[in-house]
Image (cartoon, rainbow, N blue to C red; front, top):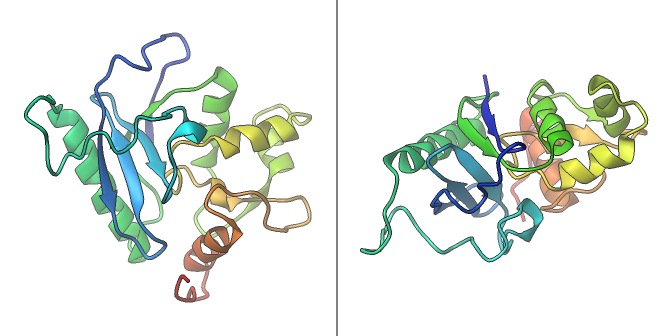
Amino acid sequence: MMNPTTDSDRNDRGTHPMVSRVIDTPIGPLTLVADDVGLRAVTWPDEDGARVGLSGQLGASDSSAPSPTTVHSSAAIATLEATEAQLREYFAGERQDFDLPMHLVGTDFQQEAWRGLADIPYGQTISYGEQAERLGRPKAVRAVGAANGRNPLSIVLPCHRVVGASGDLTGFAAGLETKRWLLAHESDQAPLPFA
């Protein structure tokens, strides 16, 4: 069960101090970002945050080593800890869904598309067209693809489960090899070691 908080009617993108943590995973390091409202981002190696609306804000604060001038919200740190624990369970094959407070910042349409990702069952895929239909906007296929491309909560909101109309793997911020690995991880096939 997801607990998304949205910001479509508030312009407070910068008013919540954020904390971050980098964790090692089978697909490489992931950066987790949270604030006192919830999880803001799960980003890929070498990502600067621009894709998820956090340009230049990643890596500024590591909750595991707080600076004396940074006030860390206990809620934000608790969110990072819960996210890390749930991602570890996911990669160990012990978790299929995430139950985390989320702070989604984006347009109403983006937030609707991102929340819809949580409804795609573990181990299954849908097309961008099917996702658009599920949103009640069957002609918004490209808009759905664009929204998914800016999904701030990679893996937690599983945009990797969305494929092209023919079933082909298409666009993914971390690359198609990572998308392929995640889908294999969720299927009956054991994923190959990540390169």
